[in-house]
Length: 62
Image 1 (tube, rainbow, N blue to C red):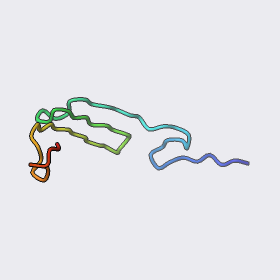
Image 2 (image 1 turned 45 degrees about the vertical axis):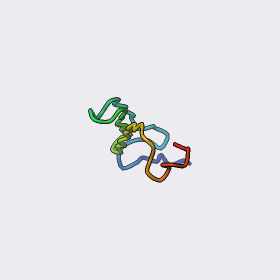
Image 3 (image 1 turned 60 degrees about the vertical axis):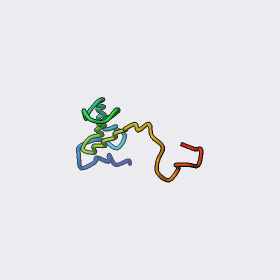
């Protein structure tokens, strides 16, 4: 006998969450995305700065 496992959200044990990806989510970062996995939301942003970081100045790196 196998028991049917169901999650509190109502999904079956073998059922994937809905995934939604929203690109360009913020207007001030060069790149951004909001990823939604059911009730879990992840925001990722990336910015670009073309100068050498202070800790690398004068070291010929960066």
